[in-house]
Length: 351
Ligand code: ATP
Ligand code: MG
Image (cartoon, rainbow, N blue to C red; front, side, top):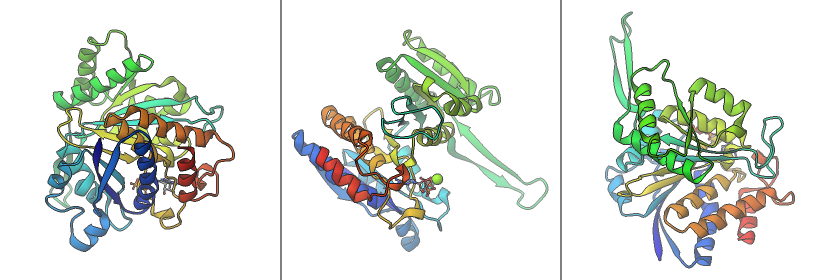
């Protein structure tokens, strides 16, 4: 069996972490009797600065034939974030119907949480973020520039199709895990979209009578993910709220450098995309000290999605084992002084 992966290393530390993770994916594939073929696409802000576009016009058609996409990070200090987002990430997520964004936030053994009293194993959260619409629908406009009646409108869109998809994925995961689901909205202040969202959760919950649903408003949820993160298991929320909550999840579990994510088309009509939660982090670019583990874990989610569960588990376990080992190399974000390459080669040894 051979899987055909599109690689988009991207900008900043993106290429560093992707190049570190790739040989590990190869190792684990060989061990489990399959191949990973990759095609590299140098798309991102360099291309934008040269040619005026993050990716070619037919970028989606090019990606379409691949089994999955592994992305490093895109973003550049001199390019506005909305260009990066609308020039590459959102077209892929929306164009490929990747309505499910799955982001684990795990406090691994051997990793310190900045939260007092929490140690390895205490936090294990799985966030399901709607990924194609909601507050990121890109519908709105500005009128009467410079006048007192100037107005900007930014609409949020919640369709039954995408909302049901994300909610159902969260219920499925809750069924496999502890049977607890936290539904995060702002339905006190947003009486149309968010009350609709709550209604969908109520409807779908009838199919999953064994899952206990807790409702939290996003303000309370943000506070509680810091105050009592160990009470959370599966969380489901809209695009914007998921963006914010998963940054909280990443930092309470020790480092942005450890958080993986999956952008999944539940219909499996198009390739899904796997990427670390962190961005291009130009502040540490070129120093060779970016933590590659978020990308390795994203690779594990990718292999799992392709159906190679045992290989995915091996990769995840090697990371778990490395982090639990006091003598193992660590990058500076985890308090160590090792390089990206040293951490990756130690993982290769463990595999
Ligand atoms: P974006 O604009 O996409 O959010 P960013 O450049 O702001 O990207 P973040 O991902 O938000 O970067 O990361 C915030 C900070 O966390 C970085 O500036 C960097 O110092 C640190 N960081 C992020 N990823 C890593 C990593 N893989 N290894 C080590 N440190 C990281
Ligand atoms: Mg950032």
